[in-house]
Length: 269
Image (cartoon, rainbow, N blue to C red; front, side):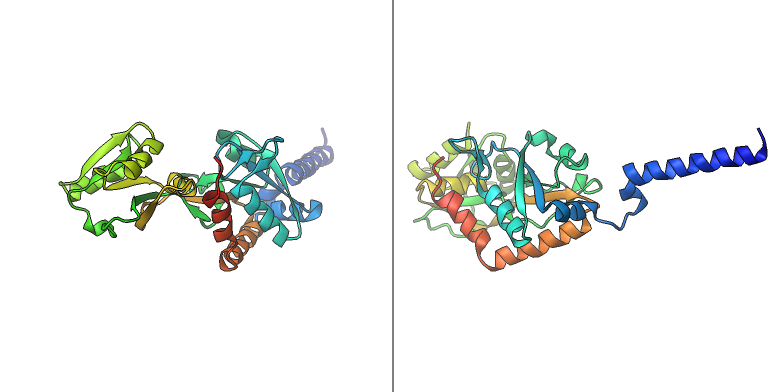
């Protein structure tokens, strides 16, 4: 083979390789581009993945249509962008895989923030904190976590609330944890058993119980945070900025508060 033919073959190979990279791996070739947002703008659709099995954040109504806090949130965000939402139902364990393979543009599905995954996906600021709260009856004299001393505290056995309770016991040895099989049983104990002084439970269970009329309230801040966030491709920098701004706006105009009231204060679950 002559040098000219050899050079021509090498050049063709290089051109073909570059073309393949441009088609398949253009995000790597042009890392500054947000192709997720560009594609969304072209189709005017935001594809959001969710697992509709966690009421009141996402569930199916009587006709099989997904409804819930997260669905309303997604539609409100898309509306602010002049887009519509395409809801893609996916099992919870497969949501991030679907995101990373481009099947969806974002995940909104009561998804907790996970620092271990930040190299692969980007997260929004929290829109709801499902962390552990200390709750008491509305007529209780206990009003601050710092007042805990010798109280009897209901917890779900083996839960994060149980773990937080054990940590509190290390600081206040007089505390007594009363363990129950389910969080609902722990809530019922606080409501009905006067020997129970307080309850350690996640915010979702607490708000659901309050929505059903339980006369209990949280005191103090979350003792163990568990923020729910929106996930998106780590290369989607423009989309991330858009989500951040819109979440800020929805918080400022009271919509996030309205969504919580709608899906918790009048829950039918």
